[in-house]
Length: 129
Length: 248
Image (cartoon, rainbow over all chains, first blue to last red; front, side, top):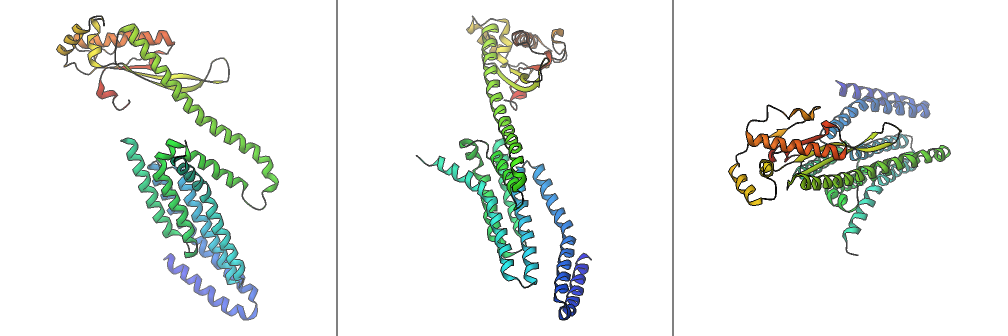
């Protein structure tokens, strides 16, 4: 049912955007952005269900919560970066979109820095001096 | 074995989580990067025994690093970063101090257990008694400072020694022969409640050997209470290997 709703919203919005684009391209862009946000809001509850399930499983089995936190951050960064980049790309700003994606990639890599440093320090201690 | 099970469970969970998260990712362009971080996490989990052996608490360090990143992130957080940094440093210091405190408590507990064991050996002639001490922090009655207190003492008396308590340790041969004679001693567990002089649990004492073991346990409890000034409920004496094997 929700899938049909989402597809309906998408179809409606694209027809409206096609009409608007001839007259007012700016409003067409705004409409596209609003539709994107609406669909994203539809999905955010579902993503929340998935994440809370993961959290429950991890807590019940004694996994370190810091690992889960890192994983959630990865998901969040990639979703937000993807969403922003697509909106900007719709507006025709391909270069800014790729910069947003670059920022997402860099921030994900920053999350890896403490892990890499711990692993490398351990490996260096394992090696004979 | 318990440790191995926990480690395996953690590895399996992290791998499952990584596979699941890869499905959840929105686009192909992010996938390589996310996969790198996820595989690093899996590697960290697999290496965690080595890391804890060589380096200490890696998880805590990771948490500190992440919270530091969280606080220093963003273009517009430069103004209040200064004010927060002191709090952050203090919080980090508290976290590290808590970790050090727990380590030093463990060391002190091992030391206290060794001293108690020596005292038991010298005072009652028991050999092979195992002592486990748990230390906790609590506020002293006078000041607000937290001081370590002995929160639990577990004494395990081997059955042969406990049953041969009537014979002092000057006659080891006689004790050995008696110990063989009284091998089928029922496992006895003595729980000393708020009344340590009540003679132990009457229900658990069923034979002369058990009574001897109970008296021995009583003597050990009295000794430790007098020497260390402990509360009556703190000390538990067990004379059975099965009931203590999961604790030791």
